[in-house]
Amino acid sequence: MQPRIRIVALSLIVVFCFNCLAGNPQSGSYSNTPVTLQDYLRLAALNNAGLKAEFEQWKAALEQIPQAKALPDPRFTYGYFIEEVETRVGPQRHMFDIMQTFPWFGTIEARTDQATATAKAAYKRYNAKKLQLFQQVKHAFYEYDYLAKAIRITEQNLELMIHFEEVARTRYATATTTHPDVIHAQIELAILEDRLKSLQELKPSITARLNSILNRSISSDLPWPESPKYQFVSVEFRELQAVIQRNNPNLQAVAYEIEAARNGEKLAKKNSYPDIGIGLSYIDTAHALASGVDDSGKDPFIAMISLNLPIWTDSYKAARRQATAHVRQKVQEKVQMENTLYARGQELLYELYDGDRKIRLYGDVVIPKVKEMLTVSEAAYKAGKIDFLSLIDAQRMLLKYELYRERLTSENAQRLAELESLAGTDMYGIATSRAASN
Image (tube, rainbow, N blue to C red):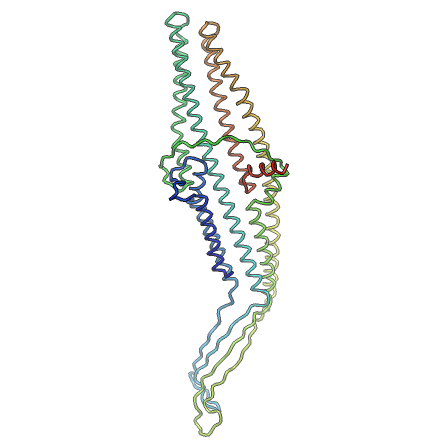
């Protein structure tokens, strides 16, 4: 396949994938106002300026391949004899030379392989950028989702406190409690109203962050997101390590960069050999002044060959040492990247498992017990068996634990998004495949 055709084909494939990811606008499945997480990912893939820049960088790297394959431009030389050189067959008036230079054997192949590996590395960097972008989208999305839940929980607790204030007022009106209970309820109401206002005023900053990722106007309003169902993904570290090694695009990019560096090392060795030039020279000759001369006015043709002389060996040796050092640098860079990715993956797995345990603890045990305690405390307060501060403490505990559970859920979703960025694939798919194989 010709380089230009390959470039166009790859570009069409990427555009097709974008369209598949975004959906068909005419089918009604695509909206400029995102609600679900998939909506946000579609818009980010289509509109994010940073991802577009990375895509153009990959296209620019592809254009280097046909340049690497090309021979040097032929050189044409024209000479005019200011004083005509008289020869036996006539005076020479003009000279025309054309010369084509050919690099040493294997130079073009090494240069093309280097450009191809560099283009492949750029494509992997583009994939890494897309994964990083999706991680940013998910992180901001789950923050927005947490804010919506926090506002809802705070509003529910505010309604609950209004109810408790009415209970305190009723008991005060019947002289079964003292006025400080009503004051305590009003103080708690003011605190909850202030907390709710702070949460509501946080919305523009989070939507601005999301809009910037989607390349939309910062002030554009975004509806509350459709909250995804929480799911825990069980992954073993060895399994994660193998997936990172196999799929992480940054690791793959460095592997291609190592390949490009090794081809650069070959190229540095080839550069110490001469380039070969093959050419043809033509001299325009007029007719001889004397009559009867054989071959009078015959124009001569001269076959030529040229070699450059790579005599400055120190510079070529330095270039080879430089290329070898570049290979070693890329190899060590890959080793360090693997170590960093594995260590971060281990940390994320611990945080995921720890967070999931706490989510289940608070969702299945703590919060139901606190709600039960709150119901019992309200009944006890109405019966005059406990004071109003004990009732408020139970309500505070419920608000605290409900918000904490939602915070844990949001953070676990964000950790999973980072883990998928490291693994270069969907973690649910890994868990499903393992379950099916088992």
